[in-house]
Each structure stands twice: as C-alpha cells, then as structure tokens.
Length: 97
Image (spheres, one colour):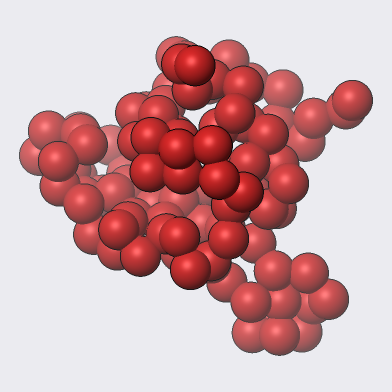
C-alpha cells in the first residue's frame, strides 16, 4: 500500500495527537461525530492547543472531505490534512494494542 505521507510519525509533533485520537476511537471506525472531544485540547502537548476537525468536501468544491489536525503553541505550530482512510490507518498502525 502506498502511503501519501511516508513519514516516521513517532518523531513528529503530531504523534501525541495521533495517540490520543487512537485512545478516543478505542477500535471504532473514524467518523466526524467521534472527534468532538478534539475541539481544542490543551492536555495532549504541554503549552499547546491541539484540535481535529472534519472538513466536508462540499466546503472546498470537492467530492471527498478530509480531516485536519492543527497544533498551536509557543514552540511549534502546524496543520496536517488527511483523508479519512489515511488517518484511520495511521492511527491504527501507531496506537498500542
């Protein structure tokens, strides 16, 4: 399977957010209604706010929507976009069983 993001996620700032999402999903399939707990979380990375939101494809004139992870803080800030299947596969691959 070819991944859109061939990255070692364990060495990135987004890794703790992916772990927290995996714990929240607890084996369930990713769905926009399951990410309400990630509106603005300050308990994942010290002094930073992390959020995950679903962006409908209709908002951007696309057929397919995506998920957006945003981290804002004093040391680093960034935004990462993932299609649903990509994010779900990534979370499942790094979340401890």
